[in-house]
Amino acid sequence: MNIHEYQAKSIFKDYGVPTPRGIGATTPSEAVSAAEELGGDIWVVKAQIHAGGRGLGGGVKLAKSIDEVETLADEILGMTLVTHQTGPEGKLVQKVYIEDGADIKDEFYLSVVLDRKLEMPLIMASTEGGMNIEDVAANTPEKIVKVPVDPAIGFQGFHGRELAFGLGISDKAEQKNIISFAQKLFKLYMENDAEMIEINPLVRTGAGEFLALDGKMGFDNSALGRQSEIADMR
Image 1 (cartoon, helix red, strand yellow):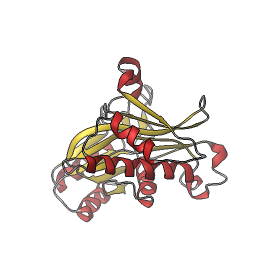
Image 2 (cartoon, helix red, strand yellow):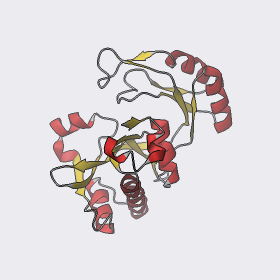
Image 3 (cartoon, rainbow, N blue to C red):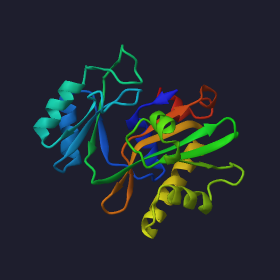
Image 4 (spheres, rainbow, N blue to C red):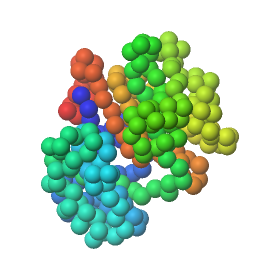
């Protein structure tokens, strides 16, 4: 079972995983109300479907006014979005997520997945944020950092340092931020019986903070009996 970005981010927030503020909407008028509630002067209008590559398919757009939020929401809602993960038939967009704009300095890839060969969770990260991770693995595998975490000992400081060094993060404050981010994400993964969490992109802001600009979560059906709140998101 997979859940939408807005659902994943609600779980992120429960665990203190830094995430931009956002509000879901199913009509252009709801999108306008969401943008007004968030405030500011720049928003992102994001299609909510179970597939990656939404931006390239025209499902993620930047709005610089309330009127533009309404126009973009009207364009995206009801469209059949075709990406490399939907197949040629695409997926119908029935909901959008209106999110605060972010000060993006760099983009990374970060995920926690189950490595069946190692029989333990694996934190994977890359400096190639925003890219299809399968393409990165095929063309530049040296740019993927892999940090296995034995559940018997849990996430430790050395796991975080290996992650930070692997991503080339040398600033001490930024190292502390990325380690804290990964530690919270791993706790979320374990406590919710997740099979996969993917953040692409994870962004570093101009202030040296890290934000989950996207969020995907998947669960094995066998876990849903233990996770009733997750099952209710189906």
